Length: 68
Image (cartoon, rainbow, N blue to C red):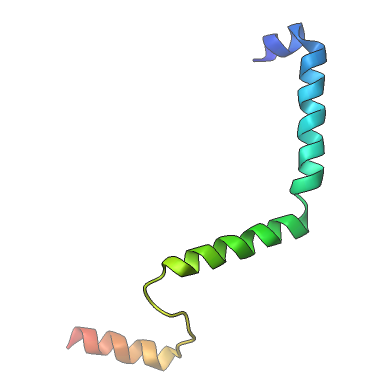
């Protein structure tokens, strides 16, 4: 790969510039947060249980019931 880049300097420069431009446009904090929001939203559609907050006591009771 390095040999190719050395022998195709202009093309390697263009690829590097395009990669840098892409990163500046798409890899900023706001874009990453947007991606994570949509990823989690889509994953939540696949869940078989409703997300909610459980207390530690509820978890202990559930574990005790499973042991019985």
